[in-house]
Length: 359
Image (cartoon, rainbow, N blue to C red; front, side, top):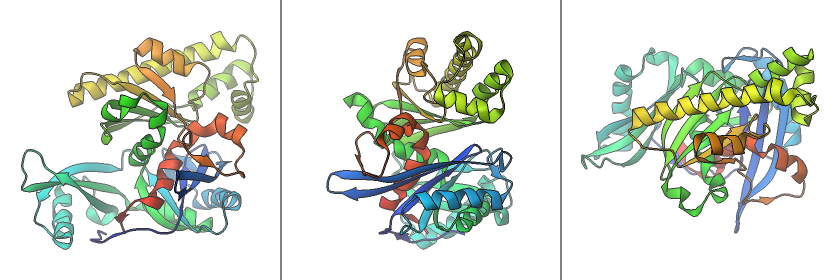
């Protein structure tokens, strides 16, 4: 259903990143000096509860979200989550600049029927006016987003089981791009005017998105993730998946793992990023990527930052969306330093507390 009304939210929203391996949450506030990190939390997801980014067991996910809620300020009841994957469609379309919001909503529903390869009664639609079209000033650029309703409703149900009111269901690639602004302070001063790629590495999927002069212009999912690294540890050292995950996090691995596990993962990771960059350059007509930001659960795998900088010739950083923020005393700063890159999506969702959207 489309709504024609923009409203400004005055209540804080917890950003909740529901992943196949874990649920991660971020709560931000704002003061005169900027954003404040009030709380963050991570809870592991039962295996099989989410497959191919689709919730298979709403009750199991709801129980994990309940644990998250106990770690986040109990006075905050609203949450934002995101959908992603092949069933999520975003397109920029061009509409008459003189249309009212109501007329625009009605016209978009008509246009969507030919743009979306699913029956409209199976999808949830939303839109946002962007800017006047440079080529035709009589048109306005409009971002149209669509997702399978069952994907949206599953996330809403899981959040409600966990004690939250769902305020926003966002698109994951836009949540990551929103958090890009938080990582700018890690890059040289000219980055705000450059082409920056963000690689968010999940357990089984990697999101490659590109921001050009601050505007999100490209996103693509790749079937590749940190779970491949974990499975290599399982295979080589006869560990359970859980033991391998713990060993990966604590770096409690045999000396020869560098050659048996780390080196091959480095090679595959570099190949994946190189391929993603080439696909972007070919489709966009851009000449190069100026900077690269790595985020997600595998961002802190040993040596990735230096490896990609050397192999790709692109200035690469590991994301820390909280670097320029005030951090509340209740947040463990040592843990934050080691895990900040994992919260890129959740941070982008938490920023919905401070921006407008269609309800």
